[in-house]
Image (cartoon, rainbow, N blue to C red; front, side, top):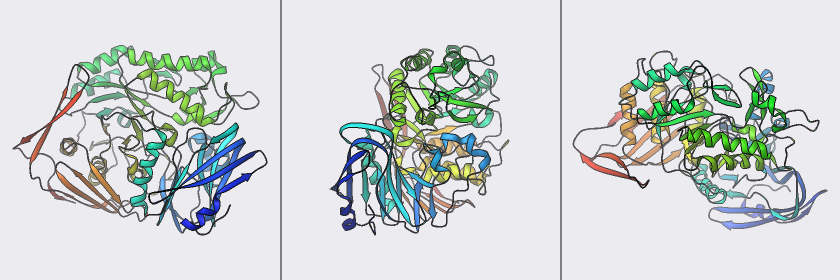
Length: 563
């Protein structure tokens, strides 16, 4: 069904009954504030179905399906030049449909242009996406051959006829309602090992940073990749003591113990795979599907519908929680949603959500940070969500924009996905690196990354060897800013790339104008304090948390103008 242009009147043409070779469809419109909701029902076997198409605008905001992928503005001349030598390595991390992604331009979940936002409200069974050619945008749903024996409602879309600076926050409110957003009100401050040590991390280095951490104001202290025996074998290796000892040592310093793992990933070399090869997703010939390649090995995907694998997954997280961990960074989650044959005949999205439900139930009210995760299918299961590529101790404006580690592209995504924060989850902008040594980041790059993260009320996690020369004044500024409580913020210029962030809290309203992100040209102005308020937190025995604000006489935080 083609309509031209995308408008209120033309949209009405998509209403009605359709019969395809293997399925029947009903499409209806519901009028909502600023536009329409597109409601779709189906009966039969559904694989890849187009709902409608329309002329492609000159520029579009497009989005990748998972945490690391880009949310960026493209024009008609844009072409995806994915390095050929990385296609096999990336695998399903690039797309749930790699068979399409590397040859076809795709946007997952939503798109936006100068005068509209068009997006799916959920992804619980199928995968909503947009296929772009030079002339047209095709609005599609992928169900991977799932059969609906009765008339069943599919994922809905909304079209909002308004500028995306206004439309995206409204759109995500609708997503939260339809998808069942549910996350902890705690927005943590903490430390992580990854961006300083990567895999070169051990217990002695952990102790060193713990002993130097007093005064940094951390709530969480999280050990990242490097502690496990193998991907899939989630036991402490010979560089670390038993996990309960790790957690206990972190608790001694007054922090919530945090741990990293990739629960849906199974290395070809792991004991888990060797003992349970039937627990991974297979192809039609019964061979394990390679989800991606990393750690110099092939990584398979846990079949989260296999009863024995589900029990293993449950026990894994129950045991980690019993060991004392209360903050879980779960990574490479897309592996749970790859295509392939499973124990149960379900869609990849259903399989993923089954695994996420097991994890959430196992850890109870612990904080879950999703990473490398399909975005919409994760709503309701995670408290925090990485919304960018990995950051890095360098700023490379000429590097490939494909989800590779890069502070420049990571910060771009922090801005272009800012509307998700404190609506679907807490946005994780990835770690702040404030060291002046062992880094290629300049002072201005560190400042800009910190200013954007704190003004957008994101999670704040630092990753530095604390024995190095740390920009403690910048860290103190970030901490003092957090003492002003929750922020109400507005982001303008998503399509133009000249970003204006207005962030309001107890200290007043602050403004950050980024004239040129590539060249780190920005102006920031912080409101003059009328009253200095100091936040204190009381945690009571019954589990309730109370925040108190008292008037202070000392000057805290950032004031005046900075450039």
